[in-house]
Amino acid sequence: MNDTTAPAVEPMTLKIGDPAPDFTARTTQGALSLSGLRGGWVVLFSHPADFTPVCTSEFMAFAKAADRFAALDCRLVGLSIDSLPSHLAWVEAIRSCFGVDIPFPIIEDPSMAIARAYGMLDAHAHSSATVRGVFVIDPQGFIRAINWYPASVGRSVPELLRLVTALQVVDREGVMTPEGWTPGADVVVASDLTQDAVSKAGPAWFLQYAKMPRS
Ligand code: BEZ
View 1 (tube, rainbow, N blue to C red):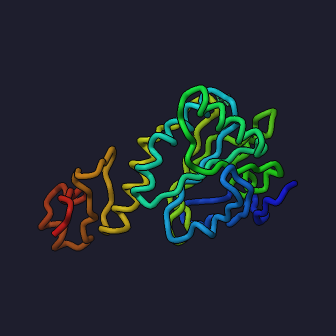
View 2: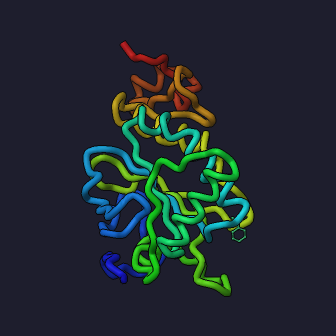
């Protein structure tokens, strides 16, 4: 049975700021519609295949960090083109071999409709495996960050937590976050581009730090 639906979108065309293509799909936790998750943040991540070492290590790291994503009102949603029975067997194997429960849904995408809509298929691979794509989707359903990793390199779950946290601070406080920012560290603010503002800020007008919270 294939009840996955997604709009036809040219592959690899999604950009930051685009609306995330909606879909309805079967998952390890029942049917899921992306639009049903509106109002909260979503990290939608694809992986090449079930029962593979890098993917298994990533899934266990996501599982261990699930409470921290939940505290950010952020839902984790995994995806690969593998079948639902394969996902279920893999989740059960992870539980029995490593004692880790996977608390988030994993989408099956046998028709590759979602993988195509999000450009997750590796055009250079011999198989139709999805690459390691991550889409951070905001509560209004817009794509706020995208990252791609090759099959051979595992992603950093702490970095994804940091990314979601930074996006939320940026939205809430109207600031930007500098390289390697972590919660509690100074943020950066853009200087007004007027002669007065630039002269008041001094020669380093182009990099102004600000304390958080801003008063
Ligand atoms: C892995 O997750 O370990 C993996 C997946 C696809 C190809 C190679 C490695």
